[in-house]
Length: 87
Image (cartoon, rainbow, N blue to C red):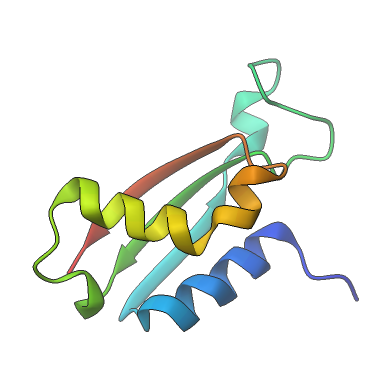
């Protein structure tokens, strides 16, 4: 079985941040017809994460840390990534 983009993202975030709470939500269908949308989805995601590893980081630093962890996906087919992050 091939791992989905959401599963890959989830695995990378678990490894990088060991979060207490993590949701990776594919919101692609809600963006049908918008820029970056493709048939089959996996283009628009929302990440909700609570992780002690983010403690002491400001909003921008938290976002940058997640972007670094998901660099391959963002350079590939992921068009948009909404983040809800806290320690």
